Length: 307
Ligand code: ADP
Image 1 (cartoon, protein in one colour):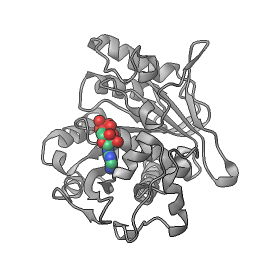
Image 2: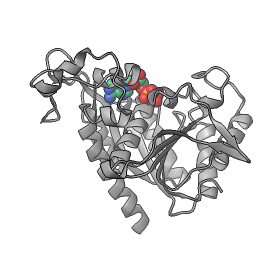
Image 3: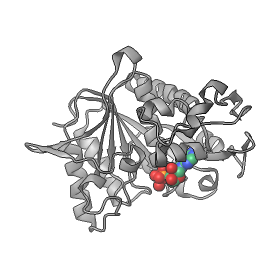
Image 4: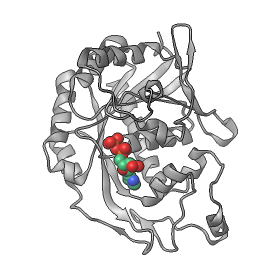
């Protein structure tokens, strides 16, 4: 079956929409690839698939092989640079108007999710990240059931739960953690996204909302806290325009100086940098934060397999 060459499956979950689940999936994928792993991303967020936009592959054509689909290659592995391959399959590719939310009824959605898990041909893949719809809906339960049935126990590593400082204050993320407990899906850790703001003008990272709630909640549930991720407008610029992130002198995020070296400043005038997304992402303030999160996710996956 299509998942047979996948080593580890990681679900990315959030209690509600708009907390940055797809952005976290994207950055986990880029960071895992930068760490030399082969990565697949499967987007089953029927509420509005945004993964194709994240990887700038909205116009990609999906090829159908006998009995299934071939994922889109974002980049091939580059052994000399220590970069692993990255392939993506999204439900968005199959919608007549890309980016539309699916309005099908429950059973059809469920069948589609099942088909997606069965009928996409993944080559040798170290990590398959699954971007799921927000919430604890029918799709989730169906996805969880299908995975529990189809995946080998050593394949289904667990879930990364994404939240924001505001969402922590609501019951959504707690519901998500309870959902994991009920369906028997291990929680690999919690990421608190949109914690602070990397100001493009004054080089400061400001906390807008109270931060730290995600960590307290993770401790309450006895799960790993993976880290805080600020809002970085340069990440959005990278995704929306393909421009390489640039920061004024003295910009510091989580105690690390990430200002752009003076000798790279002339590139500011280039409208679009044709380098691979994974290369440009290395210049983003969020890259070192995700490198650390990724290392922790990899150790959590290893521990899960041992335990
Ligand atoms: P979800 O998948 O939870 O609905 P998205 O990942 O699509 O949320 O995020 C919603 C919007 O916020 C997107 O435009 C995304 O690029 C942006 N975003 C999310 N996290 C960040 C961040 N840390 N910095 C900058 N923009 C972000």
